[in-house]
Length: 214
Image (cartoon, rainbow, N blue to C red; front, side):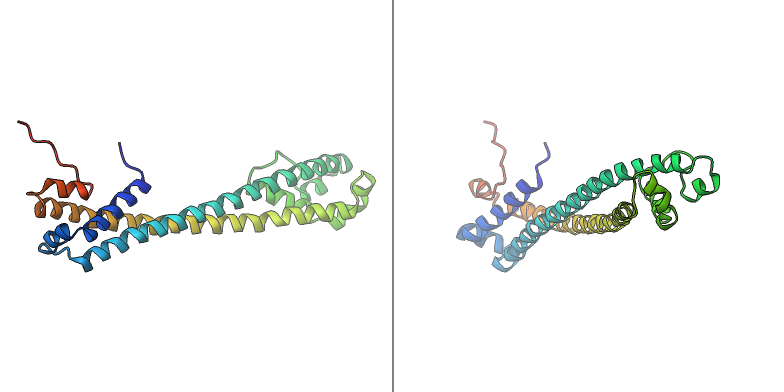
């Protein structure tokens, strides 16, 4: 079973820490180029992954919050617009030109297409406010709805920005993971050679040694 990233970081960090803290292991590894200075570089590689993992998780939390806010506001705006749209279709029944201007002909689109239709409708607020007032939607309510729909574009841009930041953070973290795994791969292979006569020392580094058959 593939180990989790958190476990990978902990095991890699512990292996390096144990190598640095154990004089005999450090002496044997130093002969093969893994002295204290080199081990500290490996430790820094693990710590970088840990830091970038926290940043990546934080960026995704921001993206999720932005997405939830957008979805919540979209749902509210959609309910308001649907009500106004139905009333406007009654108010302008038979007036094909105005229905076209307000984009009330045909089915409602989804996502950004819906926002375009809603903006076309509320963009004519000054033209339709008189007759909409008669149908129970006064000018101030139209303008509030217009502002609500306009805000969706801003929220969408914020969501896209947070999404981009999260993806960038993921890429940086993944590159750091590759660097850590490469370093640890070399470290473990060298450790097996340096400590092959002392398998118990390999266990200190978290490297399992197969039991010899009798």
